[in-house]
Each structure stands twice: as C-alpha cells, then as structure tokens.
Image 1: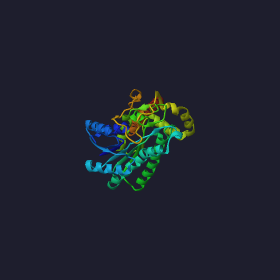
Image 2: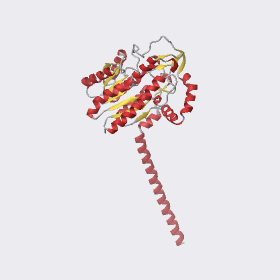
Image 3: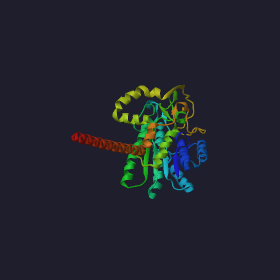
Image 4: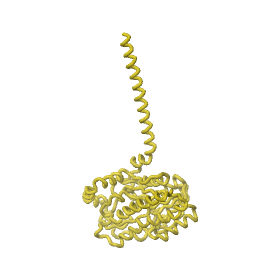
Length: 343
C-alpha cells in the first residue's frame, strides 16, 4: 500500500502512475485539488492499480493524520509513504513577505514532517515500512529567486539526517530515503506564485517527471540512503561541496536569466500558494520538446550492483586469461631452453 502526497499533478502524479504501472498498487492519493485527484485516480486505475482520493492540505498536521487513518482503514497497512507536496514563490528575497516564507515552509518542509510523523506512527509498531522524501539538488545548493523553496529542501535534508540516526539507534527496520531531483518538466512553473517579469522555467537541462518517478519506485524496494537523479544533480551537489564560493558568483550571473523564458509573465494569473489552481494539470508542464526522457547517470546508479558484478567477473576473467597466458609462455620458454641444451 502506497501513500503519495502532492499526487494530483507533476512529479507526484508521475510517481502514482509509475507505482500503478509497475506493481498494480493500491495508492492513497493526497493533495488539495479535487480535479487533479480525480485525474490521478483515473490514471492509477487505467494502469491496473487502485486509487483512493484523500483531499488534504499537508500543512495541516491533523488533516494529514486523518488522511493516514482513512487510507489504512479503507486500503490496509501503509508500506510506503512518499512525501512530494510542495509550493514555492519565484521572487527575490527583498520582495518576499514573512507570510509567504511561512506558507512555503509549512507546505514544503513541515508538510514532509507531518507526513513522516503520520507514517512513523503506523510503521514503527510494525517495525516495517519505507518513507521516501522527494528532495532536490537544491537541498544542497541554494539558488537565487527560490529562497523559500531552497530553505525548505535544506530543512528536509537536516530532518532526514536526524531521523535516520534515531532509527539506527533504535535498531528499527523502518527505512528512510531521500531522492534528490534535477530540473523537471512539471506544471509548477505555471501555478506557483511569481514576481518575475518573464515566465518561470526549470534550469536546463530538463528531465521528464517519469525519469524521477522511476528512482522513487526503486527507492521503495532497495535500501539506499540517497539517490541522485540526473548528472546535473550530481554536478551541482559535488560542485557546491568543492567550490561553494565560485558557485555563488556563477549563479549570481546566470541564475536570474536561466530561470526565465523570453515570454512575459501574467501578474494576474492564479497561483497555488494558499489554494489549489482549478483544473487537472497532469504530470507534464509545457517543456516537453526540451525535456529528456532518460538519464544514463541514473540508469548506471540504479544498476550499479549488477555492473559491479559484471566488472568483477570481467576482472576475474582477465586475471585467469593473464595467468593462462603466463603459464603458456613459461612452458614455451622452458621447452626452448631444453631444446637449446640438447643441441
């Protein structure tokens, strides 16, 4: 039994589709927007799964607890809980309000805490289960114009470190994993609040949400501390560890233009900061023609055990071949020496 928050659109929607497609799973779908939840439920059932719509705002801890209770009463014990719900504001810090920072934090950070607490309440007594946090390369590297979102992802990273240590201390079999995402083609860029003059965009290169959804499904089945999705995520995280100051200056030069298209933004358009935007927005945004459908880096990472076994087998084969060649060479040399002695 799977629970996904933020399941109505974007990556959450793609994750629901992936679980339904690969496992025919029973899925509790949590989000605010009814239209999107109905669409997600339809997707899940078309792909062979079973979906339960549970409208809730993850910023409300009581609502999340009630959603978890309903899911278990109607669909059975929760095996996997995926925290994905988010909101953001595209804006310079100096133009943000305290209320906006509070709201983004309540959804994008505390929403994950609320979901985790609801999952732990049920998983710890059974000593079984998996909690997956949908993270971002921005959990390690903040960028301009997304301070509230970056801060929330940083907070999730610290929260996870603490929780993981406690579970190890308690010798719990409940697993926790964080999947760090790259820029993705989701509808969020048309519904999050924005003060930008141009329409927002993910910083290229852009990946389709199905690429990231594959990593989440994998994380539900394998004990991995973290998974990085896409080479851009790997580069950003490693570069920030090695050269944070250089990245500060690089992003100061490129981070504004890189997050905007050349199309003007409509300052009057609706946003989802406090209320969901009406309609079923699906999993994809408006960047299909620019988005990658695969990641060689992720494929290598998810298959690293098999690749390591192949590498080991290859090394053994080479060693055997080298030994056999040496043995043949030594035999030939001895035979030559004997012939010379007889002569």
